Amino acid sequence: MPTRPSLRGYGAALVVGVAVVCMGVLALAFTVPERLFKSTAGLVAFFVALVLIVVCGVVANLYDLRQTLQEEFG
Image 1 (cartoon, one colour):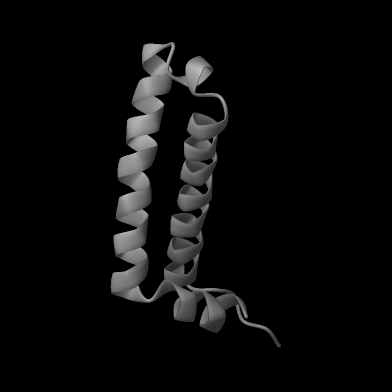
Image 2: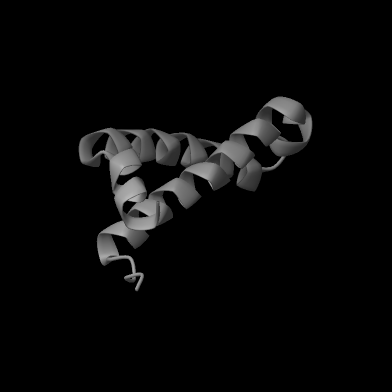
């Protein structure tokens, strides 16, 4: 009988989800920069995504999220 993932597994999935959303914002900055950087909200979203992607990378390396995701969901 399969067991439910722990809170650790959901946290790892949340970090990956945040990183994916941040990558989407950063990809938008490279594809349509004039539209994203025209407004203050777009500029703030870009810098927030940049900071969050770095934080997600540090967390992923500190807590070995690849192994955690494999153990919980794989």
